[in-house]
Image (tube, rainbow, N blue to C red; front, side):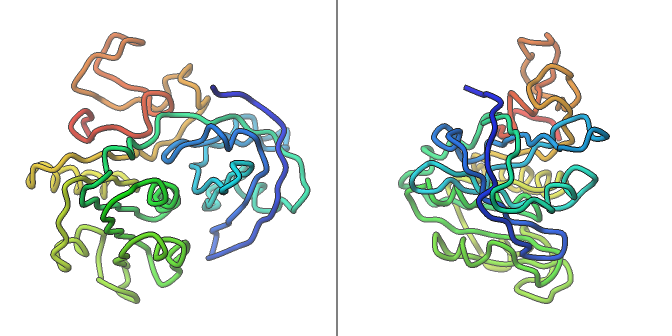
Length: 256
């Protein structure tokens, strides 16, 4: 059950240009699942809305949450200045995560692109099965690569060709001849569109986590809707709210 509470920054470090890695002490960790997110409230009075950030990892004791995020504006730039011991307010855990239980005993393809890579870490930890992990980066700043290599076979794609396959995650899948029974993915919309098309072509179930700008984070403002095949019980139209009905959807359910 989501709740707003005071939490404490345990540690923070910069791992790539504009990319920060923070551990937050909170008992919300006991409820958090892969693919869910939290909202962090900026302290600056000029920044009204909380910022949604995906959960990257939960520690073994379930006492802390790890987030890995990119500076995208005033709020996240403020977050990057936080030091160990600093108190913050967070809301969570929010959204519906990945149905990782479906991957048990199957060949699973985990695909993350850019700032869509962090949710893949906790997901890879939870899945009991054969995991191929494909990560897409802009360049050779490969944040979280070493963490993910401990959990499965990792393939890299970079836009500039500096590491691995030049191109995107689908280029890596095709070049490496990867096959799977199930796909889980998180990343920018063009990547998810390509994955949805590939999953349809191969007749593979795919679950995708949609990245979208959010305002309230709790489904009240309808600022983050996506078109769906089925009628939403809240708005009675072919829409779903990414923040509450998602961010994870079965690819066949959404029109992207």
